[in-house]
Length: 235
Length: 290
Image 1 (cartoon, rainbow over the protein chains, first blue to last red):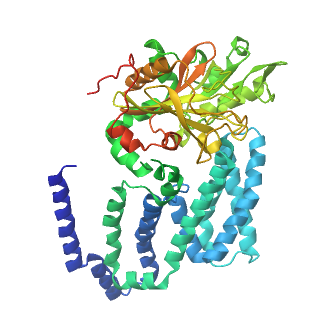
Image 2 (image 1 turned 180 degrees about the vertical axis):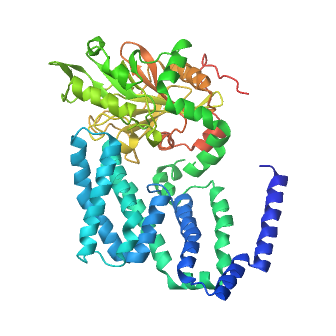
Image 3 (image 1 turned 90 degrees about the horizontal axis):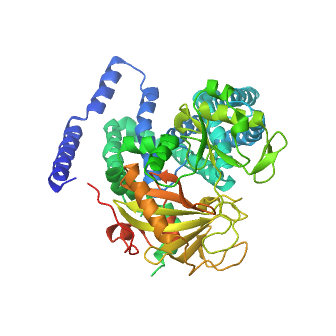
């Protein structure tokens, strides 16, 4: 990108930021909804998504916490926020512990991978039904609908990674997924953040320039500093 | 150089997206292209594209040793190698029997897209099994050591050899425990080595020295890598070659997104190497890019 285009985009960004700051379009929407008497709290949940997505992006590009994609940690984080991070995390680890040997067993049987994934999702859902029905998994059980699919997917990829690459690599990817889901889940559960968003919903638009900047960052990630530490001390 | 910079400043400007997909999704076609231009690649024994072809496949036409691979796989996934006959079927390196039924199922799994990106339908192919009795330092090899050459806009910028270990179970991936050995481009001599992310000087299994060895077929290896990179149509590639006992340097794979560990094996950053490419041996000629 040439200097003049960069300047153009910078000016455009500042202009847009000023416009948003002055008009506060999302704040206006909130006022409108309040005037009509709509219940807002659950709708404001949606505005947590940009915040969570930005957090996942930053964790990947700056820190190097690169788990199974961007969606998996985000969906898990939502589940964690509703069930409680501790209960959610424990349930997830329990599922991982039960489903991983199952997946390895399924691999002994000659079936195509789609069928294997289907069986895994089914079994994870049934297992989760049992634990939530008996009240073992805490929090809101309805929060587990989509996450159970994601979890089965993570188990599937975990075992695949374990066989194709190495146990260490698979454990790393899963650990990174859990770490970012936990961090983002904690963020979602943070009352101050929810209050701030409810008060100034337009602030979530900041996620756009932040993601843009993160997407242009070419420096080393924190984990890469560790990985390439031998180079840093090289002559 | 980290992953962020590799994507934004090297891959994105050098490698056209469609071209990367073409190269990654059809190793069969890439191999045909290289072969038709005289670049040595493993001989193809058979290609199976449909279930129908699988049903009619003549298993008796296969030799004792071969590699069965998905055409669109990545990171070495879905590859089955036989080394000998065993009864009615074949046997793997570790002696595990591989019957026709098992291999047929593996072909079916490949066709169904079990090993391709996003589960896309794929093609299976049988090819010559490459062998290297010794690694580039002359020690007996366990598994198949290879040489990776990074080519950027017609110039070799960095190279290393990946030597399998007991820990890597014969595999040549560094994160699986293989040793990476950096190679001086101009001299073809090994310079540094890395194992499990830390510098080392000897092979962890044999204890034999890794540094200062003269790599066999060096000029030929570089020339072949350059030719393969040029034919791939990609501006930034990692060309994987194996120094086969019978055929010398043979191109195994072209990577559109070669990994960054090569920097540790050479104790040199890729940023510096890209900005200021090392001199190549006399006789090895860079190609021009437009």
